[in-house]
Length: 208
Image (cartoon, rainbow, N blue to C red; front, top):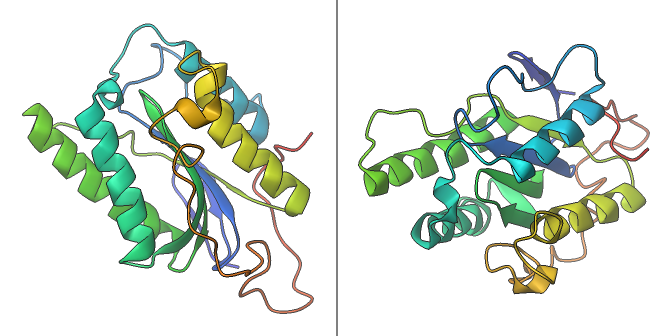
């Protein structure tokens, strides 16, 4: 199974559903690291996501409809035109993005392509050319089973409700709850492309 490492370990499997999260540069309060060594990967993610939802300082560029629309367009373009992944769910929050997808290319290529083009377009819109837009590190979690897949999809689409940005998930314009993604043709997002009998290795546990 392919893997790569920067500050976090990243383990993925082509064709198998992955939960991805990335955030704006300097979007967390000062002195709050992305994950800390005292927490599991899953615990660190939940703590980080709560901080992002509750943040009152830092950049909130994705509140701007033009930027949020651009992100949604890029998410669909990289799925439908570039075919880097099969898209299952997404949400664009004011300072971060959640994506549930089954990669068709190595995960570093998927994230570099999507984050790179959106950072360039966003900085052009904001007249911030040359400034860091996204935090370099991303969080990813290999989905284990159908129950977890459904739980993560719900977590993503309900994020605006938890953050107080919408009363119903379907009211939030920049998510798959408001704009359902096309069916993946009946393919199982958890096992597509995985050799029979090959066990899954996980980077975190979000289901507990």
